[in-house]
Length: 69
Image 1: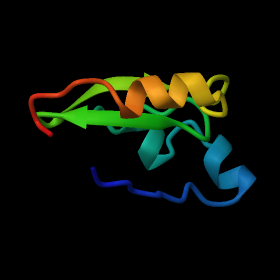
Image 2: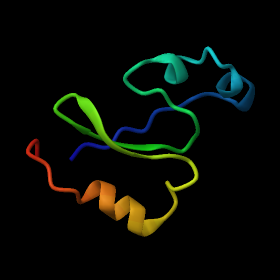
Image 3: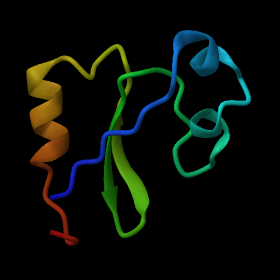
Image 4: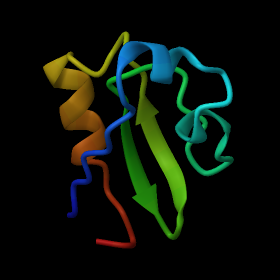
């Protein structure tokens, strides 16, 4: 498993609706932090900023069975 930490910039930069992480169709971030599990080049599961701090939700995303692992 590979983890990537991506910076979104300062608050005014992140709040820009044209921010690259918001408009990129692969990511479509709506909040930070966000946890995304990638499988076969696509987002197979994601936790938004309202769930990304919940240990059971994180475990479920990180430990989900995957044919890519």
